[in-house]
Amino acid sequence: MTIDLMNASPSWLFCIVLISAMTAMALLGFKLRPQKSFASLGAFEGSVFGLLGLLLAFTFGMSASRYDARRLVIVEEANKISTAFLRSNMYVDSVRDGFREDFRHYLEARISYHDAYGDTTRCRIANDSATKYIARLWARATSQSRLPNNLSASNQMIPGLNFMFDIAVSRDAALHAQIPNSIIYLLFILAMCCSFFVGISTSRDNKVNWPVILGFCLLVTCVVYTILDLDRPYRGFIKSDQNEKYIRAVRGIMR
Image (tube, rainbow, N blue to C red; front, side, top):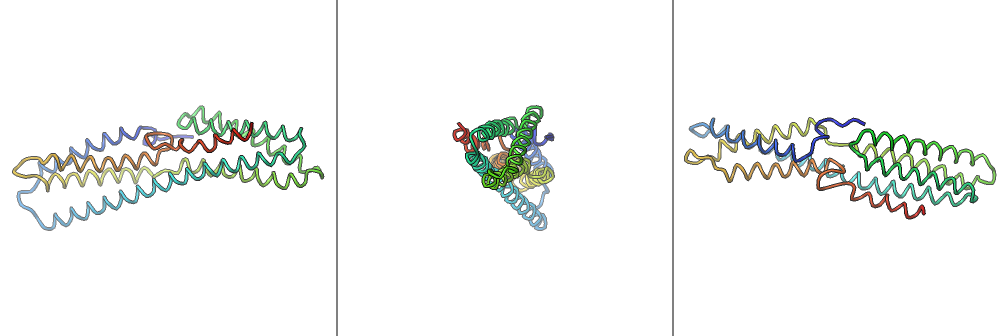
């Protein structure tokens, strides 16, 4: 798993850079303001501000939908693991105990994988462990399916394992489904362009209107920070690990 600089750096650092750049652009706009107002310039300002609002709404919707998808897929994975685990009770005690032991190790590997998000080495180790127990569970289920007395149990266990493995892939895909960096960069550029026009249009008596400039920069930066926070699981104030309680609760079933 590779994480680029944009996703590896904390959100607050990008927001500090953004608010600093927006303030600088507003001051530049103040320095380069025209002596007379032009109607065409006002129309252009409105277009740029409208485009910024549209992009903010678009990216916020993307990040919020991805956050909800991650939350739902965690619950679904917890359900699939617990269902497959309970189906092991259909086997005789010796076979059931083997299934249960592998399920416990698989669950711990999946929890460790997401706890280690961002640490490439730990993620690889946890993923390798999960893969190993996937192979063991599947081999155990297929070997039991060849026995006539386990036909009914195997008809339940094999689909349950399929669903469990498939949802693990879906959860990993949801974890890495983030807003493309190009959209974030475009959002930064538009925010700085709008700050430039704020500096042009809000100056009075040859003085910088600091309340308007700082208020605009702060509000836009807060929205951008929320977008980045929603889009980055396990970091910031809005963390996906709040939903990990559902998959950790499966430990109680496996006792």
